[in-house]
Length: 279
Image (cartoon, rainbow, N blue to C red; front, side, top):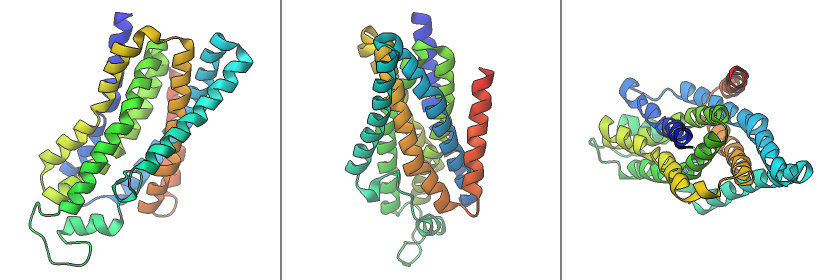
């Protein structure tokens, strides 16, 4: 069990720290490439929707079926799936719209920050004097950290139950975390002109996932069984579907042109499908 726990923790750490990859955009891009961001968000949404409906929910139904009986297991797992959607919706409702990372930062705000101007058409600001945009980045980091906490617990629990399943979830979460890292790093960088600060805040927001895994190991490990793991898998599947349709895809359409977001969505599904077939 210790070996399995170590592998589960490593997979969760990999998924969580993928936010740091998103922050690297501030090192290479002089101006935000919104078309690439749109494609990446669509790709992430495709990965998460596919793995939730094709892998997580069926696996949860199978696990809960072994504990409760096939028919009852399917009903309970499906209820937990929609329960995950409800939990995400409640959390989303409690976060003020202006500080919600699920709400796209207006395009003109990003461009104004890049040019060193206020969004209201004011004069050019010196480096590091855009507190409003800095607050967007800080609140995004906090909110993303809160959202990542249960994801870390679920990735850890699923990896304990089945390493290949945990790997597929970790890959899906990692891909999802890359644009989240961008969402934190871009406003922090354009507010402070500090690449280091943008990287640290973005990287740090992903630490909530391994912390969630550590809590699952210390507190929940004695209680983990087929029923509990199945409930967590189906709930996190619902959470991922909600995030995809409420955050990733609308934001991808906001920043993209034509069918950029849809191309990313389809390719994300295809890549996840191929990766699951190869596991």
